[in-house]
Amino acid sequence: MKPFKHNLMNQTTIYLIIVSYLTGFLFLLLIRWYDKYDREPLWRLIFFSFLGGLSAILIASFIYLFVHPKFNFEDAILKIGSVEEFSKLITLFVLYKIIQKEFDEIVDGIIYVAAVSLGFSVIENIFYAMHAPYPYALLFKRFLFATIGHISFSVYMGIAFYVHKKIQSNYTGLLLAFVLSTLAHGLYDGVLFEPELIGLFLPVYLLLIYFQFRLLKVAYAFSKMKLPFKPENFVQTGSYKNIKCCNCNYTKAETLLFDNRIVYRCENCNHIILEKNLFEKLLKYYRPKFLKKYWFTRKYQEEIIVFNKKETAIYDAEKQRINAPVHDLHVWFQTENCNDLKQYLQTLEGRVFKQLGFKYLVKK
Image (tube, rainbow, N blue to C red; front, top):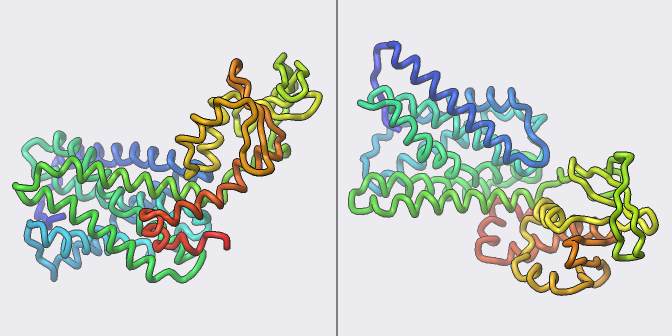
């Protein structure tokens, strides 16, 4: 962000502000959509994004009175990246009281720092557009790249901040997160500032987004807000369907709803019957870090699917259905998630993310 002088609140400026905030609102809806397990109130996200963006801009602008970056690769990291990511992190601490009651799961760390980053980017976009010959074209370009970039830079700080506030003092994690966010931000700006590096912009941009979603996936795996796959969470519909149970060959099953998804329960043996595509969606929901690439290829060739040493299921290849006791499904969907995470945190990427604060969330 560069300091600007603009003295006239003309009609074009008003339109730019309206368009920017309307576009920002659409981005906020998208951010909220990624909060799969316990969505934050929309009005609170809107308020926090606006106030957080304004606060971060003011903090950054104040620091820029004393820090004067040049537009080169080194200053992109050491000055621009560090100043703007620091301003977002400080904003989280300053405004924490606003979200304290709602800040109750790991994914919230990403959601709220993304809201601050969005608010920061919206204001920054307005300033840039006010001085551009084609302001609306610039807004579109910046929302496509700079806004998504700002969100991608800061996700690491959201995780570390959540752990620090809700789990355990996490200054090391916060420092690591700040360094990662600064490097990401500086790398993005740095390749834009250097003509000989401009060809690297798209790969760098895509890589930053890739790691953003990798971290989000880990946060999903650690979330405690998932609805347990248990009978008490099944909603009776009062209807039945002729479906053959692979366990007892009974042909009548009760139609149930689980989280607005249709599942069936055999009237005779109480086995749960799932369509194959729903089974895979539930696996993604409960165990997002499960290494399923080769597992599915192998298991779908078998009639009996062995989840682990105790839990099993029956696979009907012709009908593409999974048949299993509800307890076995619950254990394999939810309880085994902890083993997935322990394995993942031994990988190189996992070891880095672990130091952000995930190590405090792993059950011994």
